[in-house]
Length: 292
Image 1 (cartoon, one colour):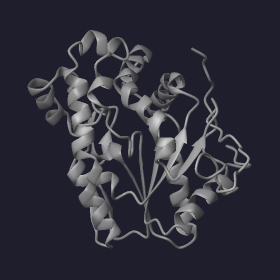
Image 2 (cartoon, helix red, strand yellow; image 1 turned 90 degrees about the vertical axis):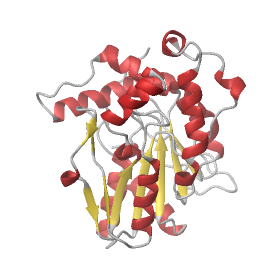
Image 3 (cartoon, one colour; image 1 turned 45 degrees about the vertical axis):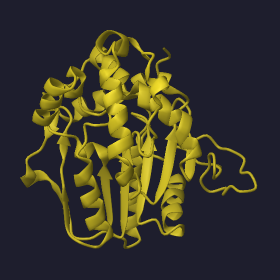
C-alpha cells in the first residue's frame, strides 16, 4: 500500500468559504459533511464554523462520533448479539435518538447539550464535560457514513475482508449492523438538510489516513495509549463494508461531492452546465480549490 506523508492541516480559505456559502445560499441550517475516515471532515467543519462566526453567525459543530454508545452499552451488545459490537463506529453503535433530539433543539433555537467521546479512552466523557449551546444559526454535522443506504441481503452474504471471514463467518454481525442502518438512521438522515461528500481516491487509502489520525490524537494526548498500526489496520476493516457502500452511493445522493487526491487536496474539475464553479464534484463542480 502506498504511504502518504502527513498533510498540512486545514483546507484553503477559498474552499472553506465556498462550503459556507453553499450552506447559506441554500438556507441549510443543518449542513452535513460526510467522508470516510481521515478525509478531513472534522477539520473542514471546524473551519467553516470559525468562518461563520466571523460573519456574526452562531455555529455549532457536531459529529456522529459524539453519539457513540458508551463502553458498557457496547459490551452488552457484544454479549447479547455479537462480540464485534464491543467496538465503536459501525451502524448500531450510536445513540441515534439523542442525536435527533440534539439537532432538533439547536434547529429550533433551544438550548442543547450533547456528549463528548474520548476515543483514546474509548468511552464517553462525564456529563459535566458535555458540549452546550444556547442556540445556533448554522449546525455543521459531520460523520463517515451519513445518508449511506443499507445493502440488500444478497450483498451481505460474502465476507468483504479477513475480519468478516474470520470473526463473522455466518454474517450475524454485518446483518445486525445493516438492519440498524436501515431501521434506526433514516430519522437522523432526514434532519440533514444538505450533504457535502468528501470523496477519497478509494478505500485503499483509508488505513493510511486513519493511522495518521491516530498518530495525531496520540501526539496531542502525550502519555495516553491509543492503537498501534496493526490495531488500526484491523479497526478499519470494521468500517470497510459500509465505507465501500458510501463510495458507491453517496456521489448520487449528496448535493455536493468533492473528490480528493491522495494528499486530501480537492481535485479541480471543469464545471458542467448544472454545476457551480465555486465548489466542485458530482452534482456541483470543483474549480481551483486547494489545501494549504
